[in-house]
Image (cartoon, rainbow, N blue to C red; front, side, top):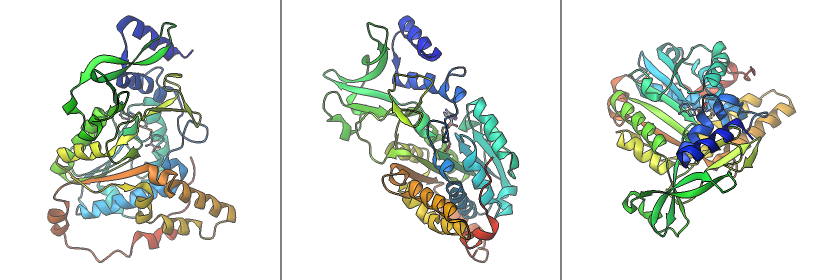
Length: 384
Ligand code: SAH
């Protein structure tokens, strides 16, 4: 049995059941035995593959969107560039290669990586060692200095703890993890409840046994970001596995070595995620004062950002095999049934973005588009 499972069982025996949120926090974040502290989650040898690890095109296109956001902001002389939960640093590495097309962007940017895992910080530092900007690591979003902000977060919110509530004859009760008679971990309903009016109307009528998830940690961060954007200007892109409308359901899942695992089976050894409720995330950012754009599927977002053009430029003159790899990556990232519609993209901006800032600066001659310049400026990423 894993060290962590043993520890969790003893803790429950001594102090009582854990909420689902407490369990997730321990499994992922425990500084000694937690998942992010001990495992190499990403890539073929890890437990799962994220979009930036599928292809360099993902980070490049996110980078192109950041360049547009910077321009729309009036190309300020200083701004905070930030990523939440950068994993191996691959997305930022590719984003910065794209950003190099606009030297002013790089000169103006201070790079902030919000990352709690010391182990992943080292990997991110190494990945970015050949980049034009070196990162400042931050423990929390709130530690990023004030100023205009351009922020990206890919598969960050799904790693934050969710609470679950079960509908019982006695109302909504918080789902907990306790011990069976044999000392195994098991789910049960705790004493703490949730008032009916705290449950969205469309969920209230769910049948007994239904599960309702809340994501207070994710919402609090989205609200903080919304408030920062409202005050200082800028834009944020949240990309995640999730759903667009609140609905009942248990979305907590464990993935270990590219296969689903029992959520309670291998604490600290499996990745735990819950799907992001984008309706709640958008509402939180709006509460903070930001303007929230209609969410897109990842497929639509990438196609609008120029995925096919980028794939064409990247594949030009390459071998048949390399072209095949690029085509596969396009499929994986954008096709329905793959990441294309499972993942959603939410863009959040300052409310006065358009009216105040865009007119503040005379337009420069229309850029002929980054896309036309792709082939000469951006080559295939060299793997670390
Ligand atoms: N964005 C990366 C990795 C996603 S995995 C990619 O797309 O490949 C989630 C990342 O969030 C990891 O880097 C993890 O260490 C980090 N993380 C998880 N919880 C965090 C928290 N509360 N604060 C900051 N970073 C966190």
